[in-house]
Each structure stands twice: as structure tokens, then as C-alpha cells.
Image (tube, rainbow, N blue to C red; front, side, top):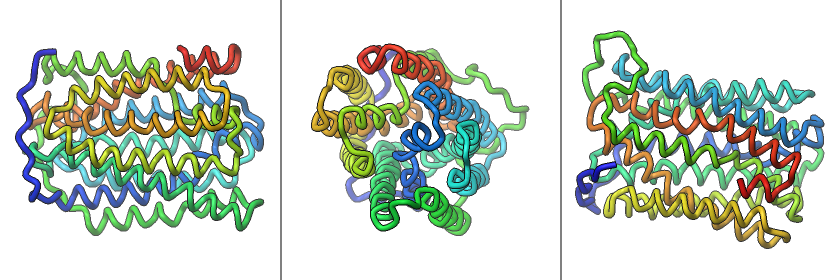
Length: 377
């Protein structure tokens, strides 16, 4: 890809826009609810619903692939509509209602249906939300804005497991009740967005019909999408890391604490490195992040003890801080001021379209040949 212009210097006095703060708060609350559940789902599937690792790959891969298809549509549709708030509110609302129902299911196929429903909500909200952040933010602080948003997301993901661990410490036999309780923070997200998020369209909506095409974008952006697809084929759901940690000797009751520490580092690294992206540009951070990912995954396959699981999990958190603000900033840098919704739709689609085959391959290798084959792949 040809070199893009250097980003403007960030003014330290410039504050983040209201919409960025509101969307950060929504992500905080949503991930509190989501991550009260997620670290417990692999064990819940394997021991309570009597599923297996391959089925875990099917559930997570299919759910994320459905989300990726909707991210493409919702991003382009929000450009066409000229408004993004409705997509964001509806997406979070669907997740708030669907997620607690995991507390009443009795079969793996029901978990499949609910996870897909939850990811439908994510698919509808994600690209319009990213575009709204870009619309609301000066280019000179875009890395900081996306870093703040992801930091709030990961902070919620750190708080959620702590609340789950505390709940299960007091009521150890009420796992299903814990799932039902997640309705409360989910509803708070919806209230916050309805009353505090301000719609501020960046441009006049296009008058033509919606076309989910790459024609509006140049070769640089298309090469970037191709690179994301290739990388994602070597990726997998973080649920497999939790399974691996359990195999290495981390007790099930401690997994929420490991997940919490993981997200504390993801949150702080996003805050710090988001600012660095504005100063140095996004590309060096993407390259370094992908190298960190490869090294940590290989080490996960070779690890043999519980302390190694802790070290690798916390090292892996750095990958997110390096890549999340940088990848989303690079999207806005490459596509300019118009059709940002469609651009973020393609960005999320490129990542998600490779998620199903990558998770299926990973789950099958894990089930048949073991950890080294899966993580080495």
C-alpha cells in the first residue's frame, strides 16, 4: 500500500466529543453484562449442556460471521439513511434482551440460537457506531477517540468477571440466575443511548439505492481489507484461550479473575497507545500487534503450566492495545470524509467473513489433534 499522509499533531487540550464519551459509557455497561457471561460459557457448554470443543467453534464462528454480514449492511445503510443513532440503539437493545435468556436454556442448539441473536445486535450497531465516532471527532484525535472507546469497552469487560466471581462466591449454585441478572446493565445501556446520544450526520445522505460495493474505495483500502482477511484466517475466538487456560491448570472459579486482569491491560493499553497512534500513525502499531499475536499463540500451544497461562493471557492483551485504535484509525485515513459507514462495514465484514472458517479449523484441530496443532496453525 502506498504511504498515507502523516496525521496531524494532537492538541493535548482538545477534549473528546460528547458522543464519544456516551458511546464509551454504553460500551462499558454493555461489556459488564456481556463479560459476566462470556468467561463462563465454554465451561457451561462443555459441562452443563454437554457440547464439545468443535461445537464451541461452530457457535462462535457462526455467530461472528452473521454479525460481520450485518456490519456491512448496517454501515452502508446508515450512510444512505444519513442517521446512525437508530442502528446503535436497536443493536444494543437486541443484545440486552437476548443475552439473559442463556439462563433458561437446556441444549447446545439453544445456545447457538441465542449467541447468533446477540451477535445480530452487534452486527447492526457496530459499523454505524464506529462511523459516528469518526463523524464526531477531529482527525487529529481519532486514534485517541477510538482508543478511549475500546478502553471503556475493555474496562467493562474487566468489571463484569469480577461481579460474576463475587456473585458465584456468594451463590455458587446459581449460575443461571447470574445470566438472568445481566438484563439490568443491558437496559441501562439503552436508556443512556436514547437520552444522551446526539445525532450529527457528517454529510448529506446519498440519494441512490444502497450498493454494498467496494467501487467507492481505492486500491489501498482494498489491499488493507485483504490483509485483514489473511490475518483473521489465523485467528480464533478468545473462548479457546479460556479452554486452554483451564487445561493448563487455572481453576474454573479463577477464570473470571484471569479474564478481568486480561481486560484491565487491554483497557489501559488502548488508552495509552491510542494517543501514540495520533502521533506516529497507525501502520507500525498494526505490524507490531500482529507479530505479538503470532508469538503468543505459538507459546500457548507449547505451554504446560498454569502460571504460563497467566503470563501469556496478559501478554496477549497488548495485541489489542496495539491494533484496535490503529486499525480503525487507518480505515478513516484511507477513505476520507464520505461513506465512512460503508467503509467500516467493509472493515468489519473483512474480519468477520474469515471468522467462521478460522474458528471451524481451529476447533477441529483442537478436538482431533490437540492444542499445539490448533495454536500452531
